[in-house]
Amino acid sequence: MKRLLRHALLVLPLLLTACVPAVRMKGDASLLAAQQARERVLAPVDRWVLQGRLGVSNGSDGGSGSFSWSQDGDHYEFVLRAPVTGKSFRLSGDGHGALMEGLDGGPIRGRDAESLMHRALGWDVPLRDLRAWVLGLRADSGPAELTFGEDRLPATLLQDGWSVDYREWDTSRQPPLPKKLYATKPPYKVKLVIESWQLP
Image (cartoon, rainbow, N blue to C red; front, top):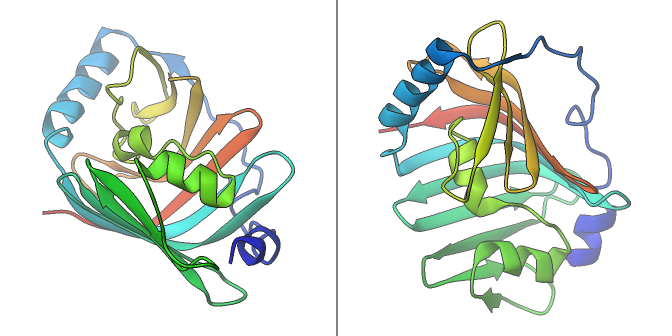
């Protein structure tokens, strides 16, 4: 499965397309206050289901597919489906450990999702921080720097060595939620296109 994911999923459709650079501005008091208000509303949210497309790359190798992510408190389930082979793997766990299923050789376990994904697939995906970033929030992993777009929503977030570029927001929701975000920490890239959200 590891070999299939690395080679059959090499093409990253739509996720690697270039976009026109967005206007970005540093946060003034009103922008930061609005972000803090968003965070007060969304930070307690720890149950959701989202679906979309994921692309990852380490600079020389990569993969992509459709995914679903269910979060229920500390328990999570992340399923990635290969577009060509139709095969999938399932990553699940909680604060006590992680389990990956669907790989050749049977299931494997690890202390957390990030280290397990790296060991199994060679992918560096900041899943712990991504849990906050996917909501458009700053994670609790350390200092963060924000810039904002013309829509007064976050355009970039620099945190924990990663640069998160928010390319599109769902403004039909209040507060708005990200629809497209690209996270980079050279040579690693993680690209998410969120097609549906289910929140309480």
